[in-house]
Amino acid sequence: MKSKSRRNFIKSTSLAATGAALWPQFSMGMNFSAQKLRVGMIGVGLRGTNHLSNLLQRNDVLVTAICDIDQARVKIALEMISEKGGAKPQVFSKGDLDYRNLLELKEVDAVIIATPWLWHTRMAKDAMLAGKYAGLEVSAANTMEECWDLVNTHESTGTHMMILENVNYRRDILAVLNMVRQNVFGELVHFRCGYQHDLRGVKFNDGKEPYGVGAEFGEKGISEARWRTQHSLLRNADVYPTHGVGPIAAMCDINRGNRFVSLTSHATKAIGLHNYIVEKGGEDHPNAKLKWKQGDVITTTIDTSNGETIIVTHDCNLPRPYSLGFRVQGANGLWEVDGNRIYIEGQSQPHRWDAADEWLKKYDHPLWVKYGEYATGAGHGGMDFFVINAFVESAKANIAPPMDAYDAAAWSAITPLSELSIANNGEPQDFPDFTRGNWVKRKPYNWIKDTY
Image 1 (cartoon, rainbow, N blue to C red):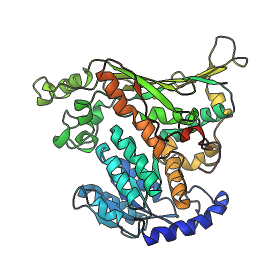
Image 2: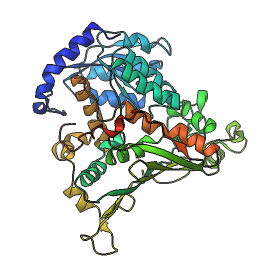
Image 3: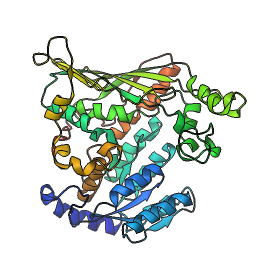
């Protein structure tokens, strides 16, 4: 189902890939390879236009098509492209399935999908079937069937997809990954991570402003409140695991010499969203009568085949400061993001934490050392700069990305498995082996380099 133009693109990029190490990799006034990737944007909401902004900084990308059913967002995207001097892209906005017409374009080599969660797998699957290199926002899948859809479609078509997990490129995370690769912590034993973020002002608004005002959601809300909140109403699960799990999976080589084996999950009672509705809209507000299914704090423990444990926390419905709660612990010491602290036996004072700053500076990742000044304005502290670069460079060379379909499936499977475990009083749930045994021989991705 791959188009002739796609085959020609692959042929030309395979020749260019031999010199990839010589290409300048980033731009904010820097030059790229002459090879241009033609990108279609599926979804140009707040997240999609952030990606669009970063793509428009590059001279090796042409945004040739956009798709969104919200005409106001289409208008914003077109203005952004025009302001950068780009040619007007083809627009697809005639209904929920109009994205399929975008996928038929020979002028599109790759797509970035930044739509509500329930569309993610369907759109990524259709993109791969159409031969388009797919960049998929998180989470990648909602059900176990969708997880397998991503893997099976990748394998049957040979087309790649990348889960766009930006936290894998956070500066402190990459420094700690560098420490892991240099065996600073010794043999790895235990991890903690999660998504701990007060999202009450995201899940509800007044239908006019996207954040922090009002108690409406669904058809009466806008932006993420229009679709994201419904998941908390209907599912008692960790519905957003990849920001925490993605970086940890890279550190312990999940799907590449290691794999998730099983998990158990538990949920607290659900009171946070109800209290917020009463605070913002009063006790008589219609939404105050709803019974929210998602527990306010969900705790999942994952076992790996190499004997590590990973505690994953989802905490989004109560007042709290933001934290992804990272902890990386090995035989020789550990790092904790909360408290910005580290302890390495034989180097730290016995039984006393070191401030992590000097350690993180010492092991600063080659990507950030080389290009940090260009990344800082790209969104989310610079992370978005690097994740988009990895997507573009992988797509130009038509090679497997750093975070592939198997990663998207394994990380996203936490959602349906946590739901099953919670529903069965914490009963252990086995992870499928999405690699079908190939995790044993797959080589870890080389994260410690200054390209992508």
